[in-house]
Length: 167
Length: 264
Image 1 (spheres, each protein chain N blue to C red):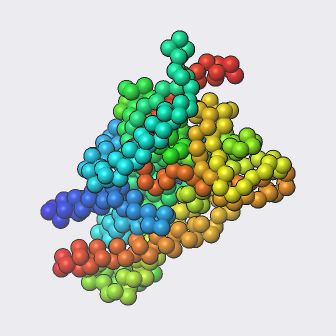
Image 2: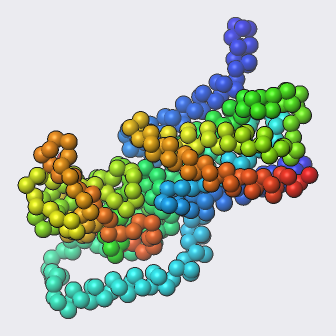
């Protein structure tokens, strides 16, 4: 029970941190890290999948309200929440099927590829919906790659501090 | 029947995902196509409250710089006053424009469709389609008003169009933004015969009902013929730095409703 409350508080903190500070970093005029997807990536594995998808959707919607984007964050969060099961199957295989995967025991290498795939999917959907034009594929690509690097660094730092530490 | 229920039950996640995704997609398209985003925006009092609180904390760190801007502007206005270089205000005539001041509590410039939120609303008689400028130049147009806050379409928004002219030759064109660089906008439809030099001023044209004539937008950075080879397309370097904004002015044109009624 305590764990659930602390997780909820942590999520609220992530959303506010994203809306108030990270959305206004604007490094080199266009690079913003997206840390809030941390909680979708490392959401407890045993949750009912439909509920998880709904939670991700509403989180994205709150971020949308804060940053005046029209359903882009909601769509991107929704997608990674839905595809997470498949990514987990790809990267953890048998261990995931037998439900013995624990995020705090992850090795860096496994974690690395899982994380990159999740962030990449999120950013591609987010920026495709934002730019919304096939004539500007280079903008989508540039924004995705640059933001990916910064999001990845922040998320891996948070992972080491909050999930590895809580052993 | 049972099979259908079984099918639905087995694919309930997929159905949930697709329906929610289509809903998001609809929100996105409805904004892109019809410019209506009344549903999702941050200018309602709940979300603006957080940005206002943040500004109240962070404004102290920026005071010196903002003071300097205000003093600079004051000195410019004094200079104009001493040179007697503007229209006298006649008490018989009605004022053409009202000017109010406001602070920006939320700003963005890294997206394709950027908005600002300012901390005045209809309780201070702000209306939709009021113009917003800073001490350096044009910023945007008010797009949505609540009691205490308003949302402004930034000049860095692909939906934003503005009538502007080349100051020296008085040729009119339309300003829009291509979504790439937050310091540059594009001025299109200037006739080929206009003589344009790099560094020339671009100002708002009198055709706009929203902005008074002659407010600075930016300077010419480069120009080229467009694809039809009959018009010039100019890259305009904005005079305002939209990445760093605090005090802005809101211009209300008193004749706006009257002129609009002519066209109806």
